[in-house]
Amino acid sequence: MIKDKDLKIQNLESETSALQDSVQNLQLQVFDMQYFSLQNNDDALSYYDHLDLEDPSRYISDKLLETNEQKGNNPLVPYEGMENDFKINKIKILNHQWIIADFSDGKYWGELLLKYELKDDMGVDFTMMDHLLYTRSN
Image (cartoon, rainbow, N blue to C red; front, side, top):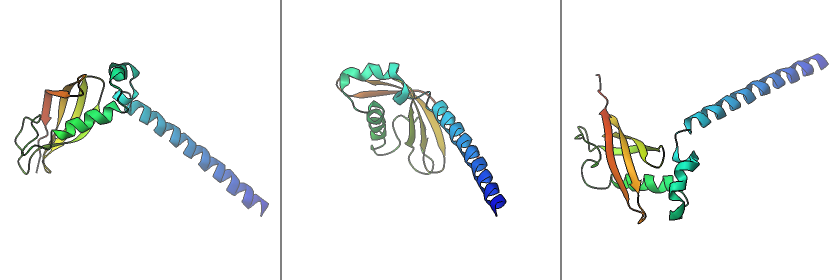
């Protein structure tokens, strides 16, 4: 009976150790994924200190999503939607100048590399730098 308990404890300790290693590996992956991110870039964030914005990334993302509100395709997407209108879905703000964004019409999708400028009047100008549309194989 004591041997069974000792074996269970040993198995649980081994499992706990493996789980702790997994958590540590996942944390390292998250840190790697966040490397190119305005939220974690103090040098880039310092460009917005004078604007008194609580969350510049959120503000810029919201402004970019507002470009979806006009009728038809998003004006930053240089393609005509085939199934529906192309709209921007996911946004990754890389730093104080660049954004990568994903767009889709529900069936077809692509990505945009955007340059942006957050101005002192809180307006945001977006300029499409490059784009791609994935080909769909049937």
